[in-house]
Length: 311
Image 1: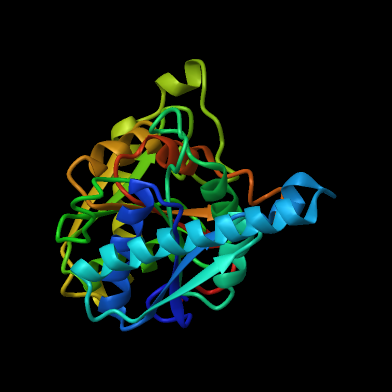
Image 2: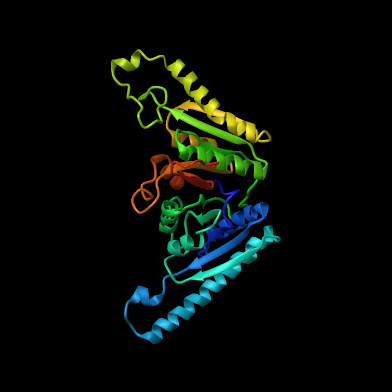
């Protein structure tokens, strides 16, 4: 199931940064198109958890101050989001746990989680924040890590880039990408890559490495044709189900993250699949997902595949 046909609402994390305001505007526009409620969530750990056992009066003063600050942050985010999405129904939540903990709890029945790639106090703009990393690694629904121009957050009709590999994670990513493209009137750019190190099906877990003199005997033109054919075959059911969505197929030799980033230059969103969820597997995103999350200058949607039917 994808974000468009499951869940009851969309959750967006708010921390007072310009990036989170851009994420809120983007999420509000998507919620409006889907007819879903947008829940804006702000959370800061309770002072007694931060300070341990201490002066209860000081703890209460800090709690009141954080609550007031949080209310101002959320109120400003709601006002900003309403400018571009006045008809979207919005609710707010102020939590006293770690931001990722509150976001994940709020998103238990959500269609989508949206978080900013960076927040307050970020040193380098491309460094993915700890909240975003935790949410991506633990969420049970697609997560968009938003990065872009807060003054022009989108969505728009620029292409949606989707990474195509093998397995249920890629199928879920493609489903979500086509859903998003149909929702926004955008085309799809489907990217599949392969390298000289492997034979046809290089993204498969059981691919056979080719190295040394054997590599010289491989007909790499035939490999390229085979990979292009696999991409075309993969996309066929999505073309049939979404005939209104224009599709560009990109099958190339090289790094998946490099080709996806290249395609994203003229696009509005990248959608990729990632296997695993939980404390260990969820934290170990694939290299392609990690590269996109840290280096992309556009929003990136991560879709988890667990082996179930994505439809």
